[in-house]
Image 1 (cartoon, rainbow, N blue to C red):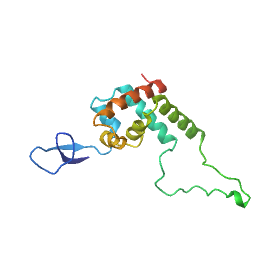
Image 2: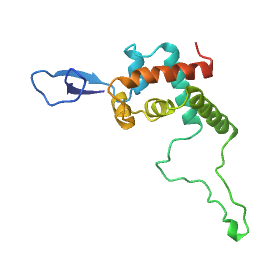
Image 3: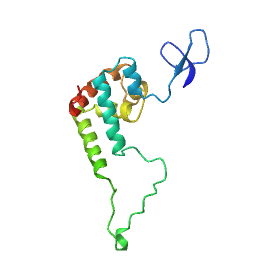
Image 4: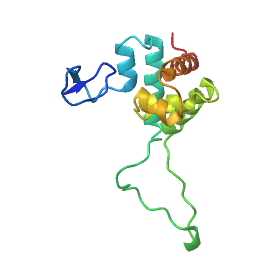
Length: 154
């Protein structure tokens, strides 16, 4: 938990007249933040958590540390080319993730991935996608409804 001063829009500011001090949980996901404030329904939240879980299980996130896996054998030295060694559960999770993104529909996968999987805040996601402020919540809600239908939630 961290305490910081924010203005009425929630932007961090130095101490000044219109600022108030709030406690912020920096570990809370953007989706959990939206759910806690009533911006997404229980079914939408559950669908988002399921999508994020499949993304994590499929290990689709970029690696940020050294991979200690054995090095693949080069095809030029008499060995066969070795692709990524994914387990059955990883492949299943990858298929579910891709199916859920496809079920969301064209153009909705970006907001889902940014907010649910990458953990971007709504403001950052809207900015990165070139969307006007507050458009992301509506679009994210539609996308999460479709993902909930895909996962048969609610």
